[in-house]
Image 1: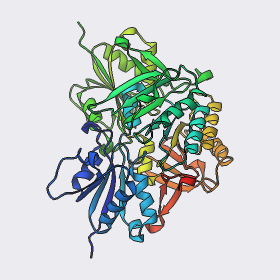
Image 2: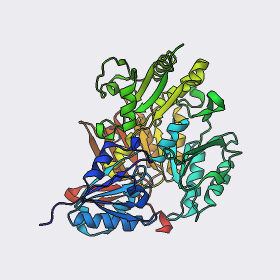
Image 3: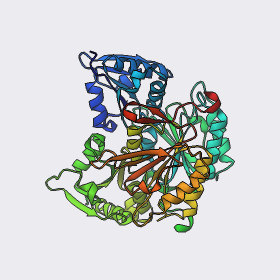
Image 4: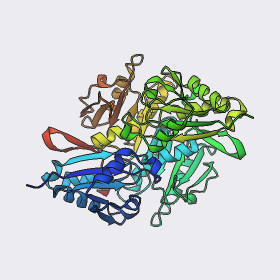
Length: 255
Length: 255
């Protein structure tokens, strides 16, 4: 009889160990097999007897199927993501694979371990930009038509949400963030606060703030999380010419 | 000369210790003073010499001012929230207080420690309901007019976002979740998957899933996070009659 396999779908957070939850640390420590994009696996300490299955980026379906196949063979597998696996990361790919795969995969023990997502790390550095209702939108059109992205950006602007933009640009998709800013500039005030938060928590962290009218969308790359404020978002002056980014809890007439 | 005070605005996550980040654990351990809603302070182990300033719920502004005043007096203060302080928690209240308070508060060392928010814990239990673009909306109209909530619900439906509803109901506000469901039912398919995730990670955790057309909004209370799917969200059958909630990465024609 095959031993009972198990799959953990684990979020490692934005990078530094102080944002790795104990649950994620424990799941990755006790796994017999680690599956994930190579730079995420590199964050985890080597352990005797533990197998590593590193993959390239953008092969999420294959990575999920590999992890599920190993678990179905009785292995105890941790499929790792950066950030939170449930937010533009591996959880959706894993459950898509479970849906389409052999029946045995639907009977597996599967657990998702949440993590700190990029927008939360960015918000923590900036102050409280997500302090009120917000949307998270991926600008990637690899798996959805651009028309859906544009519709959602328009709806998010019409609802006056704070907007967190994931996957704003990559070498293969340099133009989407420019199109998104064009769309948002047509619907939101030029003085709307904007932040480009790159690699927050990592050695190459860089944060640039601007107003929507003057912001350079070219600052965004694949490691950048962009936050665009609501009509209520504002700067709170602090020392040394810096400012906190605040979306207050009150709105309009209730102030 | 007054010693340099410091303020950490800390998220403790949804409840269990395995979702408390090392950063949050360290900030609360090294603080001279802990400020927060009493049930959150009760999660932290007692430490000799550490002062606790427990408060009631719904006095966020006073709590933030207390923490800032202590830090300005040279204390090293941790102002604690459940979840992520940046998501419908204490960070916005703290920066509002900094904005309005004495100039010394704007020169203080302030750090925000992010945490796992309720929607992430709920999503982890359910599968991958936030697997694509989503909005987070608080249904509380204590600080914003209900018209703003209704406008955002409509925009979120029009944009076909997955919707995470925070603060869906309380003893003082039992009706908002019914009004929200009425509004969403007028704009979204009756078969849209819905989940009521109550106290996830705590002893009284309870998760109920349903379709939008048949769901009972009365299941929501102040400890409940409600997730309403997009047009793409679906159930993936698993064992024992249960199902995972999945919002896939692909959308419409790109499938």
